[in-house]
Length: 316
Ligand SMILES: Cc1cc2nc3c(=O)[nH]c(=O)nc-3n(C[C@H](O)[C@H](O)[C@H](O)COP(=O)(O)OP(=O)(O)OC[C@H]3O[C@@H](n4cnc5c(N)ncnc54)[C@H](O)[C@@H]3O)c2cc1C
Image 1 (cartoon, rainbow, N blue to C red):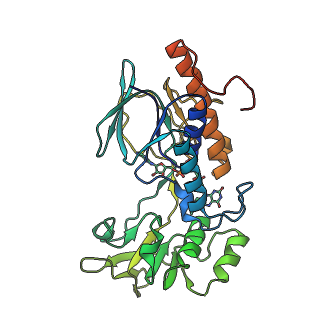
Image 2 (cartoon, rainbow, N blue to C red):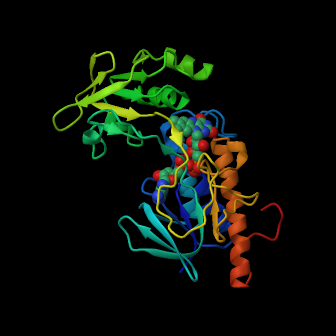
């Protein structure tokens, strides 16, 4: 029986693990692809103290810190969570199930579905349609389309331009909705070509993606397409029998201590109603730290014994 399982190893989950380890709680993180969505950004400018580091660098440093402090990582996806008398049982896609007394949910936001004709044929397995650019090298020398029009699209396009032959942004509105700073970065990159007021009508190719057909009938040859059509709050696992309340938009409701409506389950990061719905790394790490402190208090009450760790000082 684990004391604490953290579902999702983005900045929220990894910070929760760092704080849990320091409280003397063994933290186990489950994530098929640790690091979270910040790894798509090659230059992060708003995380205090780490100006212009890449998301990869920050994620790698967090992971190393969590490991060094004793946190365990399981590279897998949680598919189901059930209640059991002692706590919870988690089903994983490819590993044995695990039981735990407490859980922190830190699964972030989910990408909106991309539903162009034939898109399902080329999604995943290296067939051309990607939902992340974690494996940046795999885009080397390719013609890539990025579908979307917001800041995340701009950041992904700029990151891809470091390795790709050309990056075509396909945006359904007549203008991109990006901050001036990101617009400047797009304009400064000659490999990036915005195609405005268009959608992807169809994806074509034999085994792998070879081209996309646009809504104006034009065919654009590309070997890869990255979906950046926005994010939504959505649970990425089944939770039958759990009382996890969400707000009308789907964000997990939490109190000031990041406790959900299900006793023993806490949540942190982009998926929660916390931090005024600000979705930044700094908010995610803050919520991660708070959620661990609440899990500690819950465990202490449940186990009726003190946990080891540096929790006697108000500062450490
Ligand atoms: C392109 C882009 C650029 C950004 N740039 C910045 C920036 O410059 N500055 C800034 O402050 N913020 C930036 N952000 C926002 C920031 O990255 C997020 O606010 C932050 O990553 C949220 O952290 P999180 O831990 O809540 O979720 P995430 O980072 O989304 O991590 C969630 C993790 O949960 C895992 N997961 C999901 N479902 C399951 C499951 N069922 N089982 C196991 N694991 C699961 C995922 O694999 C993922 O690793 C950017 C976001 C994007 C998309």
